[in-house]
Amino acid sequence: MSNPNDRDRLDDLGKRIEAAKEKRRNRLGDTHAKSASGLGVGMRIATELVAALGVGVGIGLLLDRWLGTTPWLMLLFFILGAAAGFRNVVRVAQNYDAARQRERNTTGERADRAHRNGDEEG
Image (cartoon, rainbow, N blue to C red; front, side, top):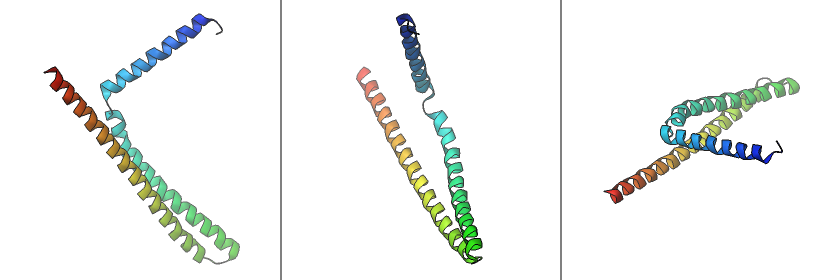
């Protein structure tokens, strides 16, 4: 690939791919991303809760066996895991809400620009 002609062809191919991606994004809008985002957020929330509880209970059980304090440390770490899980869920929900707000603002700005452009043409 040391041939300059090959490099030009690759650059041209890259530009055509980017143009096709942009055309597809404009044609489809963000509807494809929006339809999957709710399911993705739901799965992430469930995973956050289960993982936090699992880690908390696991650490509690290990410490209980090692220190002979059954079931007290498991209960303590279950509560700590639940608190961590709920904290993570709140964080995920806040991030999701902020992203949706940014999306709404961007969509509103696009609609305003389209409306202004339509007014200028008419």
